[in-house]
Length: 117
Ligand SMILES: [Zn+2]
Ligand SMILES: [Zn+2]
Ligand SMILES: [Zn+2]
Image (cartoon, rainbow, N blue to C red):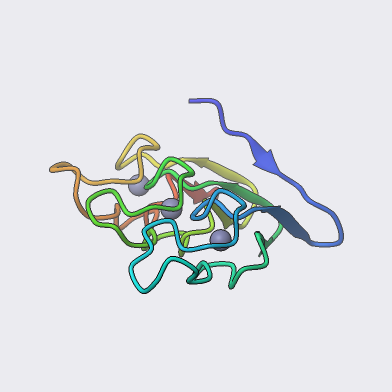
C-alpha cells in the first residue's frame, strides 16, 4: 500500500471537508435541505493536526461504511492526524477494518497505520 503522508503547514493540514465534498451542506439532508454540514459546520474545509493520512476506514470519503453518518474514525473529515513515523498496520494490512468488514481495527483504530516503535 502506498502511504501518502500529508505534512501540511504550521503543524496542521487543511483540506476540503470530505463529508460534504467541500460544499458545506449536509450531504444526506437529514434535517433540512439547507442543513449545514455537521463535520465542517458549513466552513467547507477542515483542519487536522499534521502529519495526517487519508482515513483507511472510510477510504477518505468521511462517510461511515454502513450508515449515512460521518465516519467513526476520522469524524467525517476524511483524513486523520497520525504520529509519525508510521507503518502499515500488521493486523488489518492497512485496511482499517477487522475481518467481517464492519468495525474499525482495534490496533490502528481504523487509520490503517500504527506508529513505529
Ligand atoms: Zn463539510
Ligand atoms: Zn474516515
Ligand atoms: Zn489495523
